[in-house]
Length: 390
Ligand SMILES: *Cc1c(COP(=O)(O)O)cnc(C)c1O
Image (cartoon, rainbow, N blue to C red; front, side):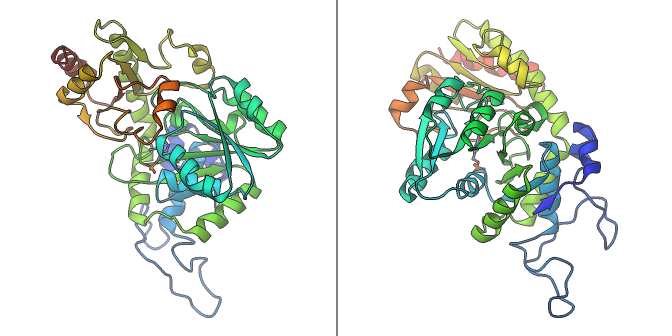
């Protein structure tokens, strides 16, 4: 378990991103956190050691990352995992056979797959609802509900979930409110401050921000939850290696800076796309035309670089994603470089067709992860690809 210091929580976001969790290396005073590439630690005598015995349980590089991200989320305890899905896995291990979960239906495809193909076999029960309307979440709660799971904005439909409302529903039901904050990042949205009990991330995305590692993190405030998640982290063992922790840590230092640029570029491009005749619909919470724009302004400080567009035909969508030059056709999101993806055949291929249809995820929907490049180059790239798409 890695606890955040009150000094770190006293600073503002941009300062936290650079400094929170760091302690000068005790051996040489290294300003940057060393990569403790070791599986074990020497003991002076039986039971006499510096608190580090084995690297699955504790690793100094990992602990700095855990403290850093926890502080960014305004939480007191952080736990790093080998991937975002390993973080989801650890959170669901809080539950027991027969427990019930209410989840947003439009959660990350891999999360939905884990819930339905793995956890359902172990006796967890799931109700998937459109969490864009908190009333649906409340209506799905049963006496056995122990956990409410939400993502906001959702991928790729950019639907929002009212975190304050869902947090209250969870409290009334005596259930934990879990929020996957990967899309918004703590730079723009801090679920713990709005009433969530647990925040998780795929650090693979914006937190690392450079598309060079895979990882996950869980942040909580309560000591009781920290005890439980810490036990699961060590007992199940899906921990990240020190080098990946170091890469994620290098990424979070520039999070505030990067998110500002993702947001500026995202807004400009979303606005531009709404005026393009070949784009039938733009999904972006920063647009006043977004049906939940007011909620977005209430619970988010920025809207970031994730945009989905409806191109009207599968053929046009295919031609478009194959013709962008700066936007690389690839899975994933949140890096400094712009990416384009086709959710129906890529990220969301594991979501059943009926569910994709129900949430409006058509075969002609394209998702953009707008990077931090010069926005005029990005717009020129989209323009030529839309022209070429016919
Ligand atoms: C990518 C992603 C995950 C899964 O994370 P991995 O690091 O790929 O395991 C979970 N939630 C969201 C919103 C994601 O984008």
